[in-house]
Length: 128
Image (tube, rainbow, N blue to C red):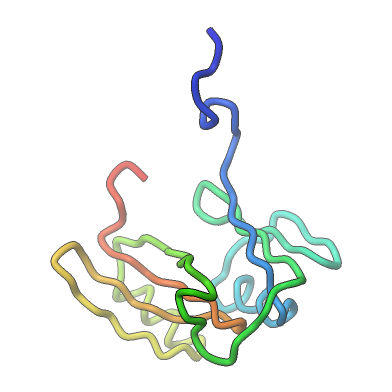
C-alpha cells in the first residue's frame, strides 16, 4: 500500500536549533538537562529528545535574556507528570524555575544560554 502522508515515510522527527553560544548550549542540554548525546561532531550535537531528537548546531544568534517571540517563535517543551521533581532538578542545576498554573495545565519556563525558551509542562500529553 502506498504511503499517504509524510509521517508514514519518516522514522523519527527532530528539531534543529542553531546557536551562537554552541559550547554553552551543548553543556546546558547535556549536563544541566541531562539529555543523552546520540551524535557529536565539531559543529553539531544531537540529543535524544523524547521519541525525537534535538540537534544543536553552530550558526545562530544568541541573546543574554529570553528572545522575543518575533526572534524565536518556538518553544522546546518537556512534558512531565512529575513537575515538582523536574523543577527541583532544574533549580539544583542553577536555574530559577517557577511554575505557572493555567486551566489546561502547569508550565515552568526557563531559557538556554542563547535565550531560547524552554518549558516544562504538566500533565504530559496523553498518548504522546
